[in-house]
Image (cartoon, rainbow, N blue to C red; front, top):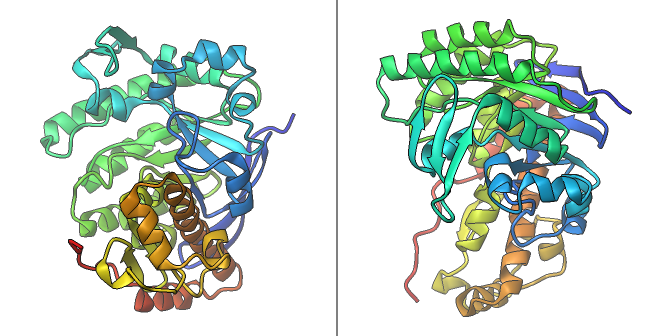
Length: 377
């Protein structure tokens, strides 16, 4: 059985190219992880993901615990076997969901009592329970249980959450996982550089297999996120993977890569696809816009994804979207996921040949962050 490992292959400035080895394959970095919250990436299947070149997907401990439950997943052979996914899987601990979705959450140093968002029944998460759930799921990378304070939390509340996250991380580390499972620590501290650096030191001292930055892209200005990346990321261990959780737009990924981040996840490619927003080399295309009503063009003439390669015209995709046809969700999601996976693939190639700065500048020059205005017809 392959033990989790990370090797750094090349750097270009702060940008890094490496490889993560897992029991379920080798993952080239930087990498984007499609989000499969409930054990499926919305609107696409495992074959689609393999064709897109995805190497690792993300599942969520909180949601999989709610349904179908870790007991059923284990009974069916584990998450990989149940969903028929041969690649690697990372499971988030569910900490963000507990504090943002659960009703009437009551927290103390032992754990969190909350109500199920599905039926209101009582639930309880502790570091040990969360790691046991992930052990049963059988994911390749497991995240520690952390307290993610709300974006408007004051400095003292952020410090308290950091202290609790460190204590919980220590307890998570002490839980015996399966031999193939790696455990990542999570660094909190919001937009306070000194708190981030202090918490990083505490979490690194616990010697996890990798380290994540949590609590970013939760409403703070992009300038603050970039500032934190610049001040904190280069202090993270060079020999371990670096993961920026829940981020973000294509330009956010570029910011992360150029500051030394290796791993990303975000619901944006699939969620935006379902909402009619399609990523292209020239920015975001809003398929509902009236100007696409008669358009014979594919989403992006330069895109080699299955949707664009087949030549599905924008007019047809717009028709499917307006009519609520399910095929639209698959075609659009395949395209958006390809855009994200293609971005990190090209970024990696540029790092390896020493041209990342030129690649990033060219991407930014062409890509327009502001999407098309919405249309009513």
